[in-house]
Amino acid sequence: MTPEHQHLIESTWQQVVPIADTAATLFYERLFQLDPDLGFLFAGTDMGKQKGKLVEMLSDVVGNLDHLEDLLPMIAALGRRHVDYGVEAHHYDLVGQALLDTLATGLGEAWSDSAAEAWAAAYGLISTTMQDGAATMVPQAKSA
Ligand code: HEM
Image 1 (tube, rainbow, N blue to C red):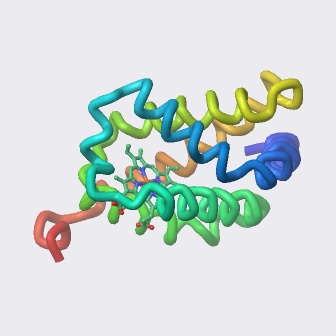
Image 2: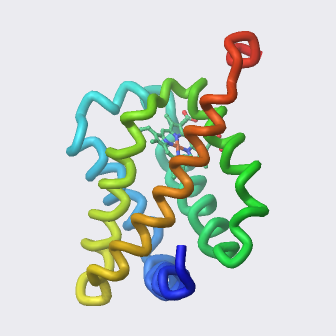
């Protein structure tokens, strides 16, 4: 990720924060529109709380872009927990698509091709790290 990417992510995220709750609602609507079958993963989930957790995690990442390497172990652990939630590798592309579509809708004129490129780079790094974390799970650890 370049310093330009970092700047674009920080400045666009600042505009999302005041509408974070609406953005999170839009995000899950878009995700279930892209794949209605994904609903089963969230069948027992309190979506109100889940939205807060997603926004909090994204805020954490955006606030630490200049030393993201410090967060990588935490992100890998998040990926390992996602295996227990039933999340599979191909779900990551759908979530990435839903995230970018939501940002584009939420930001309107403030959205641009460069912002899309920056967010895609950041999401790519996070999702690869989560999946690498998931891949390091051994079967015994999975149910521990
Ligand atoms: C950048 C990628 C992602 C981030 C930052 C993220 C963030 C989170 C966070 C913070 C939680 C709360 C629980 C915890 O901390 O372990 C969570 C739970 C969950 N996430 Fe994700 N997630 C991502 C990708 C995905 C993907 C690809 C899916 C699959 C569609 C998914 C489905 C779920 C489910 C099913 C839960 C559990 C909900 C429950 O507690 O019932 N997430 N996610």
